[in-house]
Image (cartoon, rainbow, N blue to C red; front, side, top):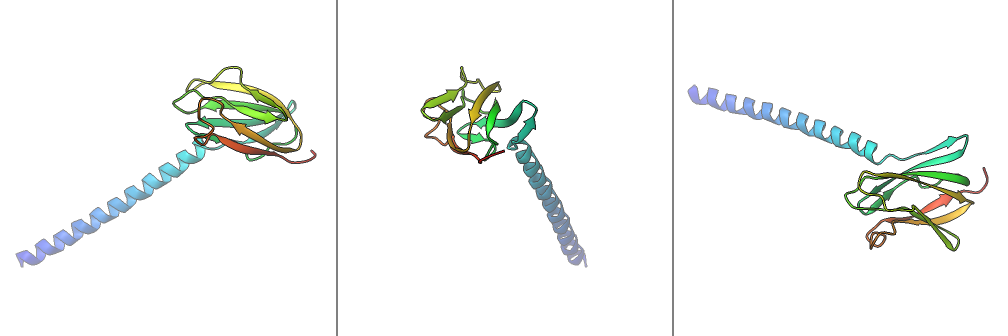
Length: 143
């Protein structure tokens, strides 16, 4: 009888441990998904002065909206990486960029007049562009 109780207790402990492990996994997954959403969320806000686009520069990634409306766009840029970064848009034959590279944690603002079309955006620091810090920005036609 003693062996029977020992096996029953071992199964019960195993089940309780499995429940706690499953609950822990659910908590960890929900915490990860909510923090990722907050870190990577960018948006375009219409203001009286025109559109404002939020940009996050991470180490070797530019997180920003896929498109912005035409007009004079203000880009609010945050360096969330651990290296210096910059933000540059190629407008015709001109490259518009921040005056100085952003240190980790720093912010900057770049105001650019954009008409409908597709624009190349990149980090012009070192080889950052070739390491993934480049993308396309779409500006649809008409307001």
